[in-house]
Length: 188
Image 1 (cartoon, helix red, strand yellow):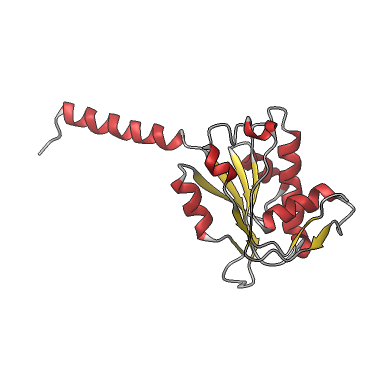
Image 2 (cartoon, helix red, strand yellow):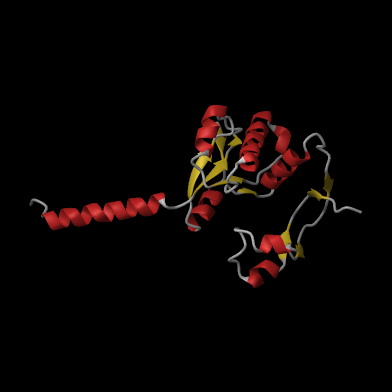
């Protein structure tokens, strides 16, 4: 049975609408980790980060930790955000991973539009902190905070930032459960 013109147009516009919706979603790049399961896998990140971002309406693009510099810039220009995930080890355990993270950090912080957010979870946050510390890699102190719930103290500027401006006040003031083994020590 041949398709009627109205049905064909309907299918076409439905497909176009879905395509437009797909490409209007933000794309978040996730920096991969080197795999210890070589040669089968060269890099990875935990699927829970993909699920978390997709449930929030974003699409995910892997950023291979060993990507060439030119390819990294090309990929960066297509991203709406970057995620450094948590994981085992220390930020500088793998030079290639740390160098790629440093290049991404530089791209974000020197971006003239300054619209690309960079999020670090656990090891990812330690990676960002290590990059910022530069030549002082011993800036982290050992800290035992297992099962310690603390409130997050937001500055006035952070509450008006693009990331938190639409947040519910109770969400920003409720205690958070933290498990840091190392942290930035407060100034004495």
